Length: 198
Image (cartoon, rainbow, N blue to C red):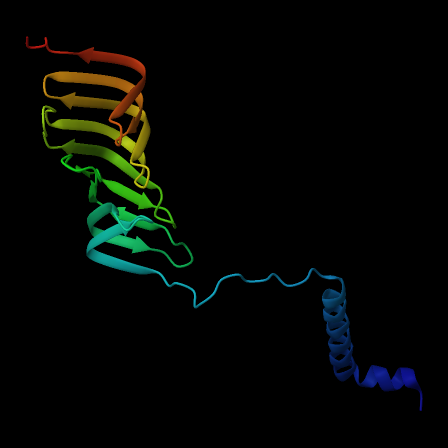
């Protein structure tokens, strides 16, 4: 019996066996030369995506105090992404200071990062705080604000306008620390201050 004729007459079974041997050799080389498998530090089942309607969310800081409250008609957490995507949010940034009212606000869209440390507000953003002691009510208008609720800070590169009583300040770019009532406008600043009462 001639081996060439035997292999030629049985081409299909020989080709299947040959492909199987080649695949096995390739897999063995991959295991031998490939990188070690990645370790997974995650404990527990993966978090699935979900959508909330008429949602009310409260984020607490490490001291157990409320860092911010959020209400929205639509909140979405996408599969594999622990960020929150929010439509038409209304929110409260607690002052965590006795006698000082919370900042309340609203925007067109919002986004909260995985850890709940960064809040991005997009579209027209309106914030206000009620009057207290000898401080009149305060309004703040801007767009695309980034806030850090844990630190009670926010900033924007967009135009911003603050109105507090008779005082009106506008400018491009803003940084604010709500804890120490520090507001910094970065460019093209225009201000109107009413005369002081004597």
